[in-house]
Length: 306
Image (cartoon, rainbow, N blue to C red; front, side, top):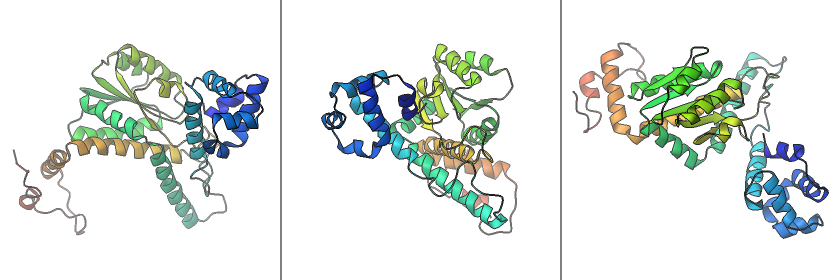
C-alpha cells in the first residue's frame, strides 16, 4: 500500500486530518517547510505531525516526510507521455505501435533504475555471493522470465534453482536453510503462495531478496533486500504486462551483472572456455564471428587453460 493510500484510509483526529489533507494536496511544498511552518499553516501544534507519523508506523515526521516525498516524486516522474496500461490505440499503425513499445520499454528501464537503492543492491549481491544455494520463487510469467537469469548464473557456477512444479513451492521452501538465498518475484507481493513461502523461509532463516512493487506489501515488509519493480500497471485492465516484465528482466540482468563483476575476469574467461568447447555455431557476419580458439585464449594475460 502506498503512503498516500494509507493516509486516505487511516482514521485521524480532526486536527490530524487537516494536516493530512494539506500533505495530500500540496506535496510540492513540503520539502522546504519545517514542522513548525506546516503546523502554523494548518493552525495546529507541531506534535500533530509527529502523531500522524507514528500512526503511519514511522519513527517521526522526518522519516515520513522523506518517504512520502520520494513516493510522490516517483509517481510524478516518467510515463508522462505514454500510458503503461494502454500504450497504443486501435487506430495506430504497425510502425507507430513499434515506436510506442520501444518508448514504453525505454521509459520502464529508466523508471526502474530510479527505484534502485545502492545499499539494497549491494546487500542483494552479497546475499547471493555468500549463499550455498540460490532459489527463485515466482508464478506464471515471472517463472518464465527468471529462467534466463538462472541459466546465466548457472553458467558461471552459481547454483540457481527455480520452483516450477505447482504445489511444490512449500516443500521447497521448508527444505531451505540459513545458507539459502531466495529471490521472490511478485508484482503485488500479496498472493497466497508468496505469503506462505515468506513465512516458511523466515522460519528456516533463509535470506530473502524481494522483487516487488513499491509501497508496503507482505513481501517487501519481510525481505532482507528489496529491488522495486516499476509500479504503473493495473492488475488486469491493460493490454499486457509490458512494464512489469521489462522491469523484472532489467532487475535480474542487473543482479546477474553485479554478481558477475565481483569476479569479472575469472567469469569471463570461464564463459569463453565453455563457449569454445560447447558452442559450435558458425556465422558469415563479421560482428558475430569469433576469433580462432588459439587467438581467443590470448584475450587476457590471466587466461590459463586447464
